[in-house]
Image (cartoon, rainbow, N blue to C red; front, side, top):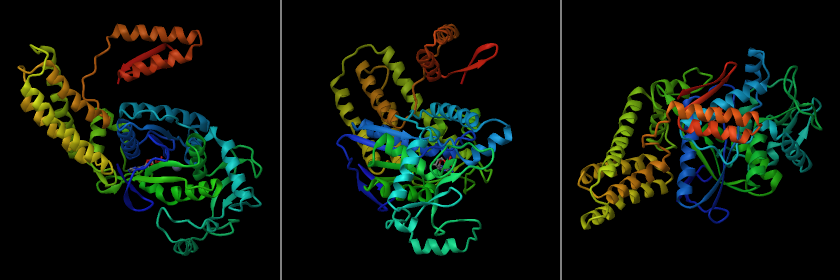
Length: 468
Ligand code: AMP
Ligand code: ZN
């Protein structure tokens, strides 16, 4: 399996630190708003990487954080007159809903920055002890960038060029030793959430969060660290400086970055206002179409969002679904079970499509070519399977399509619909579980319903539900 490593700027053979295991960290969103479809790209892409690795037999420990303390969250909380916690909780919940709709599997762990402050204080203390960080009078702690000899190795930047760039920016009131130094801890301002630390009542900088959460849940050395390409510099460069200085070992072997989702050939971003939320798209399309659209390009290429491409993704997905639906029909109407000799030969011929699919995925997760292999198989199936086929033959063909679509995380089988009565019975059971304070069971029921596309809403008048 080859992975393009941003560190070496080349495709490298993947060799895990520990046999058959993968430790993977994906930088998650800052939760102050509904996620936009650009944010959905890394979620979909790295979920697919995880699925493929699991298919190949790896046990993947997949960690993805939520940044739940940040200027933007505080600003939003002040605007609404609520706490930052209320904002972050609300948007984590919404984000998880979008992830479920996109068939992005929950991470092994989704740590929250606000629950890991102790670890951040520990790592900052270590960096101070080792001479890589210093506190100044106002209670800010900075990272001493120049002290870390490898600074710039990920983004392939030269530290002296960076310094020249920084000199032109006139920073006032800074107590830094060097313009390149970045913040590890900052003192609170009036009305901001804060934690007590040896340096000031305040909060951590953004970069230290990921270094600490990755260390806690995956260890000092990990296999893959991933995120959007905008994170290469400074976020990931700073994470490397922090983690490697504190832990004394290489932080991550492979660094993967997805290209940007654009709109009208411009970067889609919240600040520019040219974005669609995942929810906006859900009004018009099944979100499987969005997932299919994202995977139709290589993850490192820029991808331009357009109605035309979404329509073509919709048609493409429909073609696969129709073929699977047709096979299910043949399956239930088959006149006999056992494979004929011709069918056996045909099945071994069909194996070439899964081989093609795999070799595309082995080549730095080329999902665009992998999807072509799915289409070729669909075409083959449409020619070869019929009402005259044996049950086992159509089952095997269907299994081959579903193997590929499962790796891509695409739901192509029509789900059995829950009847209203079943839903209401489950809701009643959930209410009873809650009364008994059996929240585990209550959550299980909610998730089970969510999986079948039923969304629950707790209101004053009781529980309401709708089909998503
Ligand atoms: P943020 O909440 O801005 O930290 O972003 C969360 C993740 O989404 C990061 O991995 C970003 O790199 C990624 N991201 C943000 N905007 C886009 C975009 N337009 N296209 C692709 N990825 C993006
Ligand atoms: Zn991060």
